[in-house]
Image (tube, rainbow, N blue to C red; front, side):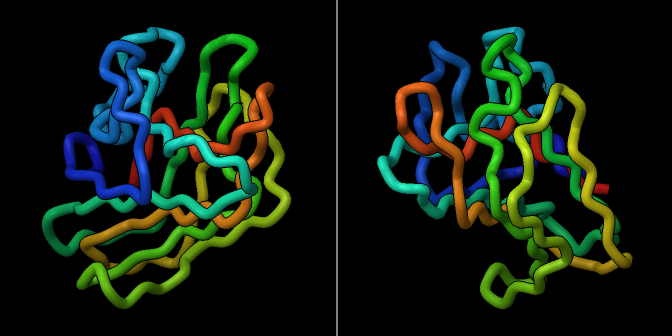
Length: 150
């Protein structure tokens, strides 16, 4: 349901040549090893950070799960996946309800991470990373290969 839907983010790399663009978070391509569509990456920060991505489903939609795919490109698999985060939903993009929360989430493999919750009708879905992990250079990003909802 999120495929092709608009994405608003806290910050973004927007590097088309490297395959990191906001729109790639909902382009339907879950395999960032392809290179042309890595997904979305927040801009680099030197703190554990707070970054988020919001998907506009463009109408009220019944939801019961969010699927987050991290990076899947070799030794970088799972890099940039948030450590602490919430999944929130909203009807108006102003008032949010948390439907899933994780703390100390381990770096995932290549499979989509599925977070289920009681069915709710909403127009917007937000992934709110409140603690990020460092990459091999000590920089912090929130990086998602794909955001899916169902």
